[in-house]
Length: 533
Image (cartoon, rainbow, N blue to C red; front, side, top):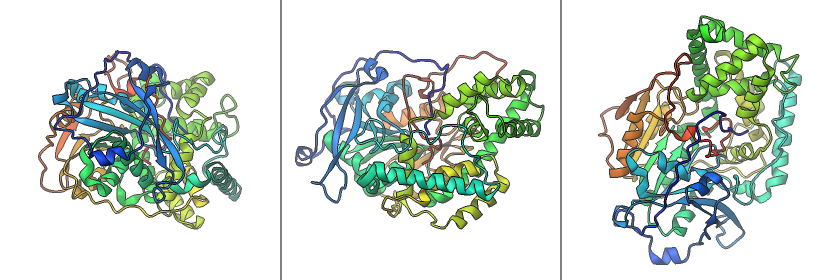
């Protein structure tokens, strides 16, 4: 399941003039012998209109399917590049980017540099790529494009029949992926993608990389820094995965944090009852939401939006405050007027049934990064316990991950993350992030003693950098321009803080800040749960 570009957002169309530059002293080239032996990318025109407008280049890089057999079968990683726009003396090197997932397409994310304030992004070559199995990389993994067509069986297994239906669906999906993926499924771990990042570095002739990772991309960054610390120049890691909890416990933690964020959104709706007429208290709005969901059990809206799809739509309120206004209109339109067009449009926009590539890769990575509990009784016990305090998302999340019970790929062991040899990393986190709870950013700071943590206090939006908060975005720009980090403080706490911006106000017209999330020319294909979102 993939996150679709939200309708009605501003399209940024500024043209960019690209200037090829040579590496300067701040970004040295790789040794000649290493560069000579590396596979090369043949650059050409990108298919994405947004990348074309910016003068980006795109190509495919041959990498080993199995890095233990470097001369064996090859697969291809799709790569894009937007070159630096500065003189050679000011060039800062290559900047790889990853949007999260696992399963998120990062090919168009090479535009990220233009969202860094004060021109600080212009000194880098921004390198987007689709991780193995994703999007334009070859092969791309897809198992069952009809898997998310609504209405689906109810998430909550109130009886054995529902439970068995979902277990069968999950088993059949895993089986379909085994048939579709074949040998690829044994080589889809985070470490495989880290090796691909190394292949990209070598192909571009760089001795070090800079890296900007969101959500699951922070796990890529932490593992890369552990395995290749001398290759890290600068890193910005936003929305940090707690490496102690990959991946089973991380999902249970998400459930509890999304419950909190949905209640915050219900409270916001109550504040604006004069606009939405859904209740004057958070509790009234929450009861209204569950009442409307219950009605869909017997009569799905438009024949497609049942209780599952209803939950999936409004889960995004727990992810991004930028969705609150549109989701509020969809909720109010359905609850008050039974506006089928609005709720079905929200389903198509946010849930987007069809291409299952992101979901397939999400499972391919998570199910093989580490061993999940192999007994369904363990899942059943833990999810019912969590459901009692966090009913909104728990069973939705459980079934999203249930293919891991049956996954055919070879299971690996997670890397023990140790960032002690990484000399520079800026961690960023929002204190009310649900997809990657803030404790993950604190744990990342503990493991990277030369890093610093910038916290956006009171913000629920997930991985919120370069999204219009000047305090956050300017701090990132300063780091990318100079390499200077906030001074590390004593104790287990952030090293610098920024206040969250005010929540959206439906009664006031406001100018939308230029941000990556407001650019509909950028397709960041990301699974429903971007922690792994």
